[in-house]
Image (cartoon, rainbow, N blue to C red; front, top):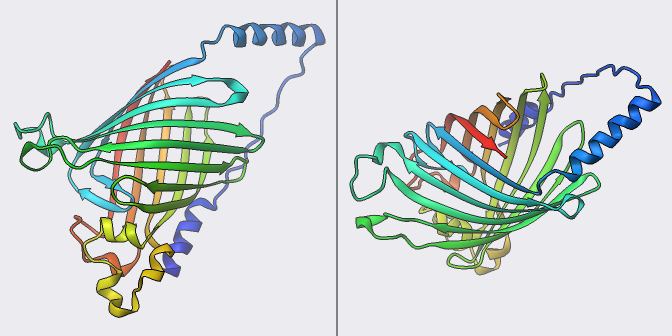
Length: 291
């Protein structure tokens, strides 16, 4: 465990420092430039739209490998930018198992559609967020819809030039009645005006109802009578992920990217479960447009 944490911290401890010289601007030119920026800002539409497609070698969620075979995951975002009052977004995300495209009981391998409503606002160096996710599972067993569930969440990130720490807390209030939390560090470096690289490390954990809901082999199996109802509120470290990623802006609205990640279920008490792997090196490519 110590070696995992040390490796995770080392992955994001490398900080690139760059500086740029900027030519001096005459007062008249500076005023004209400011007026142009004001006019541009006044004419900016507050509504924005994003379309993205990820093609990954596996479907991994919170350390759990649902499939180690290719999957494609489209996403659509519709948002409203209220400037200093924050941003409101509606997001639809789906997962298609590429190997299930020949299964006529499902549409091109479709097995999950998630709907998210999210609000975030910048307060000084912090970005605060809150939202709601509705998970649905079409074309489950025998072509029937699976049982859906819902989560509410809050998030916080501290933005700075060195490394960005962030944390998220999710509460499933619908079916599972459980808590999941994730903390992490993120660092991005702009190599050019169009090319950005980054690294991210996360650690996740849940309470006892969370591990009982998502893992067939739980702490009850490992600890026996030592597990009591008093431990329901305790958090157990469940998963970790180390990722490297990059994004290249082809035009102002069009971009492509890539991601390479290593995800793992950390606690050995949770290893004997129904998922494909306890750890996996996976990756993918993405493309998208933003308006």
